[in-house]
Length: 176
Image (cartoon, rainbow, N blue to C red; front, side, top):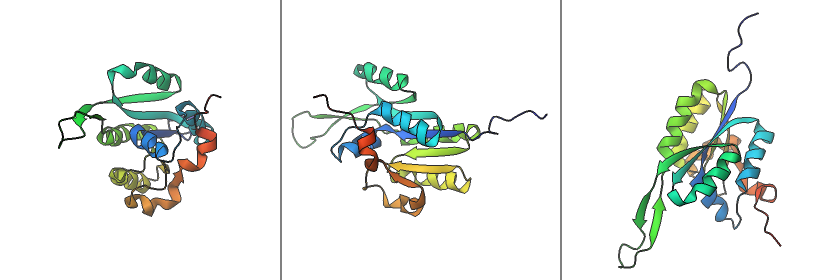
């Protein structure tokens, strides 16, 4: 018998832009339960590894521990504090942690290890990665958080699934 290669079985990895996902579902007036989402990825798509790209904020250690316990591999991006009101003297700080480059790089580094990839984002900056994955027959799905995703992704419509349609299954249940 020949030696089995690592990819003789279907292996699926998910690459998740956490800010795009989080802000996208919040714009639809609900909050994603990240633990339920990880279970969904496993049950529906047999996701072996789920890479979650997230800006690093030192005070969010409990959140990061929860995400790791839920089965995510967290890839942290350093964040910047940006003054939202540049015209006024009031200091309203917005935290920026753009993870696009890290997500693309990790998807390329991991490519020999997976047969199929799921990209979780509606950001058109991932168009080149998605086009490449499709050309290599490795694109399984693009999970967009709402209907307002980049028009650059529309040519991949057959791969797109709107997470907002899964609200009842994936939302944080409010405590009575």
